[in-house]
Length: 352
Image 1 (cartoon, rainbow, N blue to C red):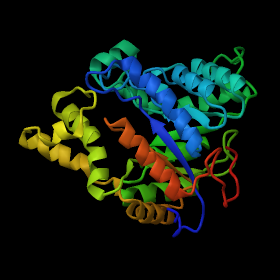
Image 2: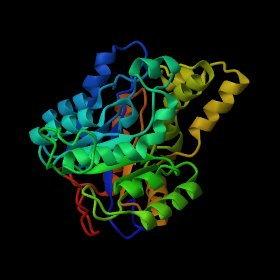
Image 3: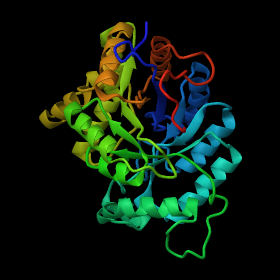
Image 4: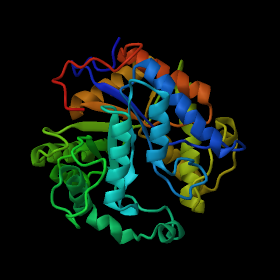
């Protein structure tokens, strides 16, 4: 049994872990759990393991993705490690190039540079970072400038060189919605796009990306990663309950302005909610792939066939870490991942 039967092609399967905190547990535990999770993902045969960037968010411990990526890479030996992603508006491109240059020098051939254009969650966070909402407007320019530090190409202060980044080839990925797909194409970066909600818009964006893609020092050909939550369990209801903690955290953030630590699913299900909270919570439970192994195999296989994706990036978080690991274990099994190393491709191998 394989999840990509309809596509008649084997696809790389990867993980993004946000180092989600759990209520009543120390934040440091979430970071240590991320490192352990990466080791487990490597043993299961997942291809990449990425970490994220969030600032001032009680529910997320991962605020320094390149630092955490270094810890993950040091604790593993085969799996590719990267960021999903470093938010360019928050950083100087020279510093980003230097950080990834150090990572690639320490762990050659295993580092991915995932990049996004989000800014801080609140006005206070944005002020503390020294950026504003308008900073997202220059994302395309920042991508071009960043590439210049690696290639000795056009960039500000051409007399300055990024050490040890210059001359290294690290694959770049742009985390994008349907609008950002055009920026990824212009930059010659791989596209990472949410594909489990608003599928028609996603498919249209992927089509535009492939048509407009311009080869770069990062990628010679377009490369599409579809990302989203996937939960697998013995029953459909058990799989749905894995999604409950994140759905409530999202509803809470949209009604209270604070993204909280995850709480047990049973507490959320027993919670008295306002009408707006209930509506947002129910919305948060829709649009994900979840169910038994057969159900998830069929759903993901169909998604890959429709999108022509080269890779699926699974982003699921939950309070119950044992049940979450079991979900990822089941997904690896139905995808036919080998026990060690990366999945075998039957497509022409891309450069990273």
